[in-house]
Amino acid sequence: MLIGVCGVTGKQGGAVARYLLENNYQVRGLTRNVDSEKLNDLVNLGMEVRQADFDDSNSLQSVFEGCDAVFIMTNFWEHMNPTREFIQGKNLIDSAINSNIKHIIWSTLEDTRRFNDDIPYIGEYKVPHFDEKGNLNTYLESRCIESNTIYTNLYTSFFYENFLSTMKLQSNENGVYPLYIPMNDTLLPMVSMLDIAKMVRCIIEKPILGNIGVASQHLTCSKIAEILSETLERDVRHYYLPYDKYKQLGFPGAEDLGNMFEFKNVHNSRFCSLRNLTDIKLNFETTSFREWCLEHKDQLL
Image 1: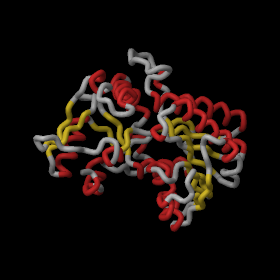
Image 2: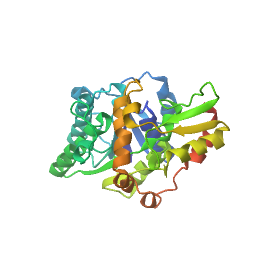
Image 3: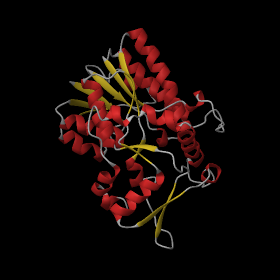
Image 4: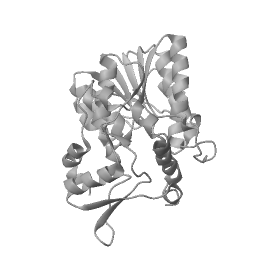
């Protein structure tokens, strides 16, 4: 089978492309920058590369032609503009539909505006990097129904890999590595990029249709800190920050992420149930956070 994969120079799309290639699929990778060195390993594994600009529908007209299925994703953090993210997702969905793709897999999250709570709005959004992905779920469903195309909304979780980049641990003057997350005793569904890739393969092969979540493990923040401490042999401690304090930390996206953690806390049972580990483990054995930390020990500090 030939699978189209978006975002192959990024963590998620790159992991999906690599895993499919290593499991005897043909992969056509979409990227804006065909000269990126990040493509070299995937090309050596046999990936076909197509240049595509997700903002430009004209550049997407024939990129999926001949594919049996496509894995579509957008990267909000590249531009932090939810309206632009919706347009990019719509362009990709329309291109896949117009190319008569049999199965569309969309990497997505909830539209938090459809939940009843007191989480404050940030302009038009509660959690900007969630909401337009969730809005696109409805668009994808309507386009697929009218075109008789099968689809899967794949709901992802908090990435393990965040600890290699945006949430990389740094020690304070006392030698402690603080973990500031505004969640206390509730569970945080987490996922490795490898497990997202494994789920994509299962979705294609079974196939799994409609809505499905993916997570590797559900952990409290205190347990996350404990595992990091044990595997890194450092003093990692979770510090609970109230949501309003977290949103005032001042880094780009702090308000967005503060609302995200509040959403995951307020709607914890519903959020976790969509990412039910019992159901997920019927498809493959997930990667524990401890196992992942040991594998990436040299990169975590």
